[in-house]
Image 1 (cartoon, helix red, strand yellow):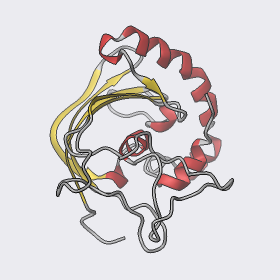
Image 2 (image 1 turned 135 degrees about the vertical axis):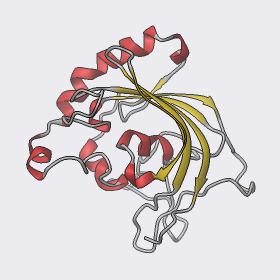
Image 3 (image 1 turned 90 degrees about the vertical axis):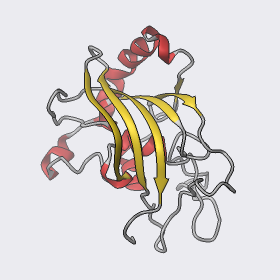
Length: 207
């Protein structure tokens, strides 16, 4: 598996997954260490869960399974075109979802919500990677390239998650809460989410 620098991805998709960390915590955090430690744990988990049969390991280190595709016709009025703004930054749509979150280490459900709406800018990095399309175009319609002149890897699916999509994502802790703990979520916890996309709409405020 090709390893991606998660700090580089953070610069591309934003800082949603580091917003809870203090500057000195961020400087000391060794994300690659946890990618390496958790990779076999995630594989064993995916192999043991029947509902994850056929899941794909993306080069980001995130496992995913598309349960339902969602919209694929860009002519559909509800299809969302993921965009960049006038200065080349990704725009973060508002999404409405049903979702369930589990701990990979013991299967405990820590979140189970319906009809939740929030900006994609405010969610975990693993969610952002899941929602955005693999490649995106700039304002001129050209595919965004990386430093080597190749299409820049951003998300994990060709179209990005659309209305009607259902996806299961199993993410290493660098794409979750990293070394920070949350109620019911210990530090450095790999996470398993089932997400049903009800709506994807343009940002409510301009960027």
